[in-house]
View (cartoon, helix red, strand yellow):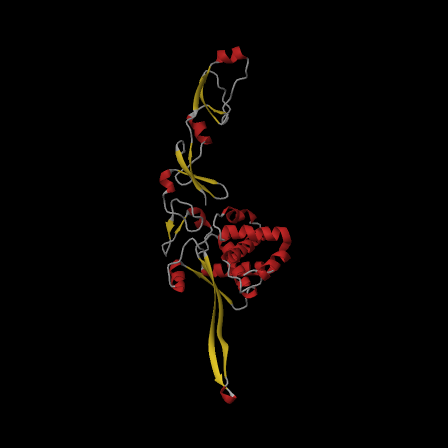
Length: 304
């Protein structure tokens, strides 16, 4: 998410009299907001537009996304699919774990924070989360990436994920895919003392964990991302390159977004400056755009 400082320079106050208008023969200027004529009135100009009053000027100025204050001086912009303006005070507030924007957030049961916008469509109920996951799994399979039949899904909180990993889970990550195989080593001594060693698979378990309390659209996008990891694990397990694994998962998530009419959400992949997630996505997408899906799969066959 881009973050940078902007300065709004003081607007210029000009006085235009009726006599000067008549003498110059120019037309009477009007306020860009309310249309009021500027005869014997002071007015503001900004970006080649005219404003008759503080009220009209303020309506054209950026406002803090959190507190609503008019931003005439310093402000900070957080770039999502659009520019989000904040006063310095609100820019320092805690961030929502879903959209990563600062503001007035609610602390939920495991310490995560969520903003009012993400809270509106949050997937809180775990039964609803399972239903949504199954819908995403079906759609991703229709796109050509069916899930392993042994795959399990678990909606979880931060503490549960931390216990699973044995370490503190980064709340910037919204989901996790794990494939765990337990093997038993069997040694036998045959005729003439010849020793043989073999492996027996005791358990083969695949699981996806996704944060609860995410807004619906982001939950489904994350599910598609993790399902792509499951598909790659079973078709190209030798691939260890992080940018390929994460870039491919992001690409499948972008295909899912488009398929359900939410392609506008793919701005996150395009704007992500992370070399693994954003950079990986753009490289994978470039291959698919140039060579098609078959060309992408041919690339995966030889990738490591």
